[in-house]
Image (cartoon, rainbow, N blue to C red):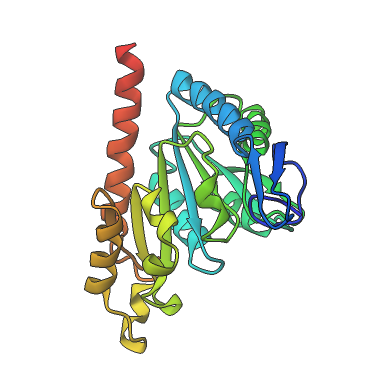
Length: 252
């Protein structure tokens, strides 16, 4: 079983350097290499690719069913005439989400993990090359829709510019407290399915305050992909980030 997350995969870098026990046999100390070192090396290589090509990369993480794919559909509809959009879709099985975003006009490559509960940088690297081959070049915006999980994806940097954590109104307001690392490692927090607020005991103000107490630099959006509420602010944010990324490329 995976030492990092218990996902059942065996491809994480892990090596015991030594084990020390006292004469009673009751005390064990294990010293290990950084389990994420290989992932981080490839992530930085990914970042070099994306910085060189001027690609804005957005990594979306959330629990299953929070509305990542629906938000992507809305986003693609709003921006597809302005920018070349590519999507790497992470799932344990099926191409259903990739098919959905393709139907909206974006190029997409499905990354199926076969059981692992998160995407890792080497798989994303392979997927990006397949995507650019499909598109005939680099996109302006690359969305990485991670596997639905608020735990493991927060530990695996993929080389992205912006990590976005989403929670939906039906999930409940306690997610920042229960999954703090997801919020501490993200730059954007999106509360989704706000059209359902009348039907759930969900205190938006309290959730924002709790998330910002963990990470005061979080940019917070409240959206409903169904009604369109808050989508314009999200789209404007992405436009500004693309502008920043292209500007940084021109300055080199």
